[in-house]
Image (cartoon, rainbow over all chains, first blue to last red; front, side, top):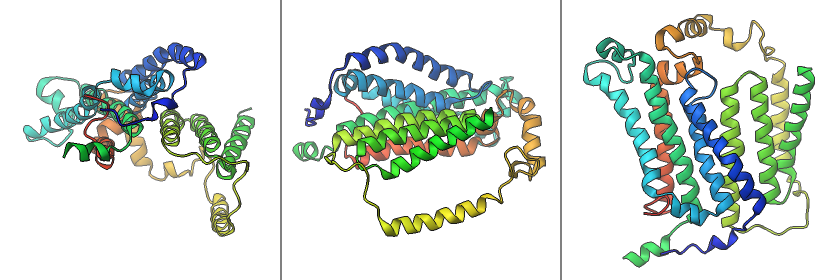
Length: 156
Length: 181
């Protein structure tokens, strides 16, 4: 059931839609580049995740929040935000299972010969970037939908 | 050349900041505030802090502006013919006092890049990270090495704070899903 009646605030604009259609692939690529290349060049997963998230916000502004909300499943947002937190925690906890410290990346090299670098990459690419991208998207759509006090009272 | 650039940028950021405080119409304020953030992002890039510049551009100028615009669309925008906000004398006095204190303390700051700058007060620590970051962690960006390696636990806390912000918004707005099932 849709109680939010603000979908009329959307105005279709050829200029904005065309601009976003051209810019969005580049913005997404740049976000992915910052995320995956953040270990060796300026930038990093926080910035990359924020840009990946804002690409979706850009699409929502150009093509309407409602259709974008229908396209972006809640499952995706939760998987990014909660999955990222889980990856970060698990990568940190693995060394602890073997008696080392939390987030002790050199442990992977000593134990299994995996370069220390991959520990950092794992929490950056698998942790921080998905969390930031997911939360940026989630905040936007949940604020766009507004409070749903009426819906809750109807369920009772 | 670079001094001219810094001067123009400083004038732009200052003008945008004053405009943000002075304009009456909320939509105008949001747009001017985005311009301020973009100016600050350029400033950080100019001061050789590209990582901070990217964050300011993406979060400050991008996401914050969109969230503010969204809030404006969800609420009521006051119709006004007044261009400027009326001056609140007590607020101006308090802010003026603060400004005097801040400007007075400016002289105590070392010049950017000077040998006695704060960053070099503890040369053993800074030099340790610069000298050992690559050997210790295997990543070339020393900022990433510190954030994900040496100070990984702090970053873990920050990541959990961001995650909690998303969950807290769901709780405050009394919803169970971000988009739709």
